[in-house]
Image 1 (tube, one colour):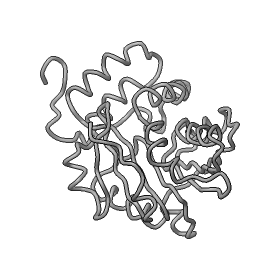
Image 2: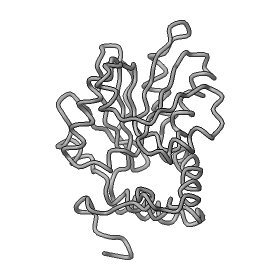
Image 3: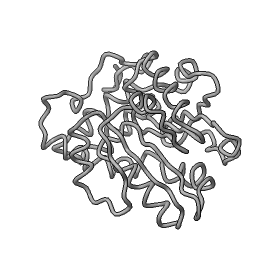
Length: 245
């Protein structure tokens, strides 16, 4: 460890986030979900991803369906639904999470654009043979080992008839240092502690290329992000890619 930054040479696969503990403080957990909205707005890059990848495939007359896997408090799902509605494009958003605490928070938040929240998993949706035009996740990949990642990507290939995009943190000492400083004001939540753990657990671009299945594309995105995407249709392959950072 140098200057308070732990080694980033390998994924800290055994590190655990406080908010994943079943007996963690519920008030602190809910404050964490509240603060995710701000953090994701600043660093997750979903508006750019929507503009470049999702919006070109939407229509004002034919509705598209989007699935958000591991939605947490639901802020990304609600943002995507809001942007599409603002652009007068038809997008039906379904957000899923197996954690009832996440769904309780998500369902209490304002939801003017009608996102549907379900307590379920991608594997369960595969079992009922449902399909979506878009399948996404935010900050899910770093929770998974190589086998779990492969299982998720197989599920996405079966669920997706258009484009699948997974956005996550890219591990690096600079990412750790920047997040550590930027989140100092965010108190009374798990954001800072768990965020630093997440960075230690996250994949580098090279690691994700090795772990990903064939036909999945790995790209980088500023700041300190990695994108894993799969195009099931020719139209999805023709959307504008996000350039490497």
